[in-house]
Amino acid sequence: MPALSALDATGTWGAGEVAIAVLDRSGVIDRRGPAQAERPLASVTKLFTTLAVLVGLEEGIVDLDDPVGPPGATLGHLLAHASGCAPDDPGRVVAPPGKRRVYSNAGIELAASHLEGRSGLAFADYLHDGVLEPLGAGRMRLSGSPAHGGRASLEDLVALAAELLAPRLLAVETLALATRVAFAGLAGIVPGFGRFDPCDWGLGFELAAHKAPHWTGTLRSPASFGHFGQSGSFCLVEPERAIACVALCEVPFGPWAATAWPALFDALLAELDT
Image (cartoon, rainbow, N blue to C red):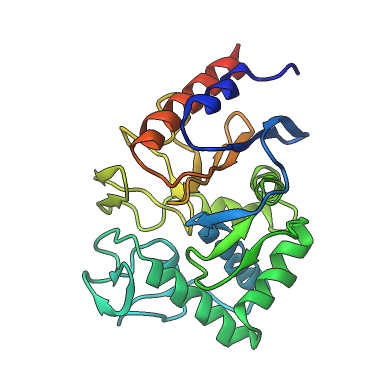
């Protein structure tokens, strides 16, 4: 396939050197920027952490119904930002479990800590052995929070997206469970884009659903899922078209991204659909 003209717009973002790739189930269709330069992932780290917890689920180490976090909350609540745990304080509860979508770094950290306790391995080691090494995402490093402390290269994000398009590490059924709505009907806020009712989320994965305006644009299907990070990173999977787009930027998320990303995805899908 010839180079994708939609990617030319990344040079106008004012986001520094953008590393971006588009892939389908056969591999990378087109890419721009450095493939091996390591950059902060911010909240895209959550997707790698989610895969580690899902591997633990398949191995029988953890269960989604395990009680973790605020009273009445479970591991499933934590992954779906439905535990009521405050955004950055694991000891503070701002809503009853299952009543509101409260985006919480602390909740994801509690989920990782639970896996660590059940497995007997440091979470970073479990992540490396159970996810990064099998995926071939060897440049990804976790330094600090499992919710936002990762650094990775574009190659690592391509490896992640390839797994999400055609799972080999996870069972197809497990990924399907993680990418459908968990605790449906909850209202909440997507940081940087505002309040949605409902604010659909899977297990660790944000679901595009019918959110608008949204960072995923207007042409993607409601089944699209992924995550973006405040570092200017993102991973978006469009399962109905079997394509994904991943990127790392040198400039943190801001108004530029809220405008540039939806336009990029719309242009990209329009180009691929022709």
